[in-house]
Length: 76
Ligand code: SF4
Picture 1 (cartoon, rainbow, N blue to C red):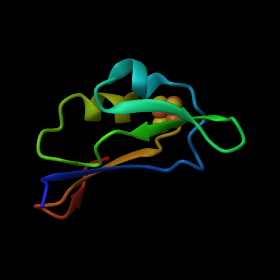
Picture 2: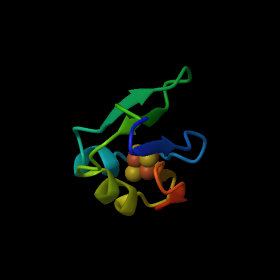
Picture 3: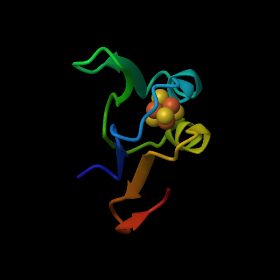
Picture 4: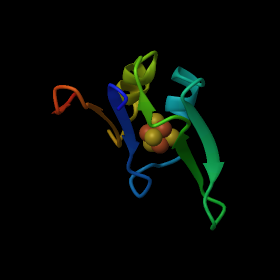
């Protein structure tokens, strides 16, 4: 099992692209079936947080969540 899980609440995502700007290695911008821009986590299960925490912290609606799966603890 990977050490961290990165999740994104698509319903809350406003499509502002701040996460993608902050951490393009881990967040893509896509369009949903209505053509609304939304962020997408490239790799949800990771061993190295990289810039994911930065992206989660810049999200204006706090819809990016990271869990430490080893400690079973929600980090953000
Ligand atoms: S920063 Fe948050 S609201 Fe903006 S695109 Fe990323 S996940 Fe969506």
